[in-house]
Every structure is written in structure tokens, then in C-alpha cells.
Length: 249
Image (tube, rainbow, N blue to C red; front, side, top):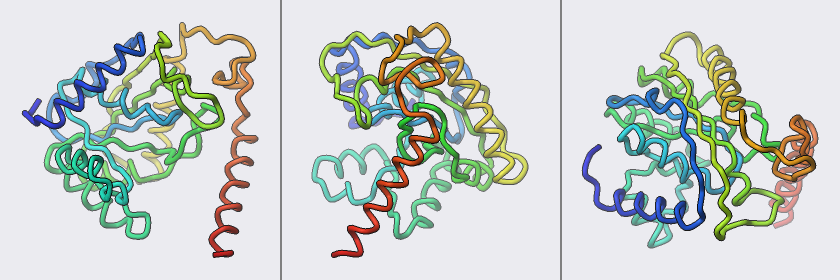
């Protein structure tokens, strides 16, 4: 693990926050994190703070993660400072090719880049439809994709559920799947990745207590989270509202 003072300080802060919250983190498969060389870390997305767990699991493999973050955050003095010193990759939605090229360059330089194939948080807490960016990056940079599933982070802070930022003592299960080598077409590799992440997610959910009717528990497991179909309808309505708001400006 290279010496990066700002990254080390930020990592220490994340560990302190996890300790203060009483999070009980269980790791499975951390031996699958490549100890050297470029790799795409593909992670499911259930909450606003699951990026913290991504950093913690990468640390198990003595690696630093390069996050892809909204470029406009660079304008914030504090966040911009952290992005620069932690080698975050700014994503401009109007110029996605530039951020994609930067991610590929980081991978070729031997970095570990975090990608959320679902792009946005899953309200159903099930895997959504995957975008092909992770696969395309891995193929172009000729690096493996490591599937990672995080379970329980949605209980801390996610969409449509009250936050639980204090000491909550929540268990967090993290499963790291076997790396997938770069092969086939982007679509074929994306399908393989989603299958691997589905298996990792079910492994992370195994042994986790899921109270009946809990809002953070998927409908499939007896909870009251919206089904994937209902969640998709909510997101479509939100997207339509945003489009309408832009047109009215």
C-alpha cells in the first residue's frame, strides 16, 4: 500500500466513524482482492455511505480505491482537496468520455477503480439492470473485475428511509467474489459480472437477520422494500419530474 498521507488520514476517519457507530463488519473472500496491478472493483449500491465500506474492504487487500465522483464536487474546497489528494476521478455527465478515459488510464497504471454498475441506489435493495461501463473499462485496460457485495449499509442512510447515523451496532456483511478476467464482449462480460454479483449478494445476505416487514429488507426476504418493478416505476416518475422541471426553466 503506497504512502498517501491524505488518503491514510481519510481512511482513519472512516474507521473511526465505523467504530463510533458500532458497526460489526464481517468480510468474506478478501483473498480475492488483487494485491497488485489494476482492477475494477464492481459494487452493488444500496446506500449513500456504502463507499466507506468499499474503502474498508480494499484496505483488507492493502489497496487504495480510486473513486469515480461527480466532477462538480471539485468546486467544494474540502471535497475538491480530498478528490485531488486521493486521486478520485471526476465524472462529468456531459462529457463522460473524458472520465472514462481517466479511469482506464488509472487501471493501466495499476490502480484499483471503484465502479457501481447499477449507477444509482437500488430502492428494492436487489440488483438493478447493469450498465456496461465496468466491463468496457476492464476490457480496454486488460484488468480483472472483482465483484463485491455489501449488505446492511442501507440501514444507515439510503433513499426513503430515516437515517440512523448514531451508534446503531448494525452488522455489515461484505463478500468479495472471485475476480473475473477480461474476456468476451462488453455485454457478455456484463452478464457474467451480474451473475457473480448476485451470487456474492446472496452470500452476504446468508446468516443476516432480516426482521419481517422491515423497510430495509427486500420483498423477496419478507421485507416491505418495494419490489424491483415498483422501484423502477418510482425512479421513472422521478426522472420524468426532473425532465419536466428542466423544461419549465
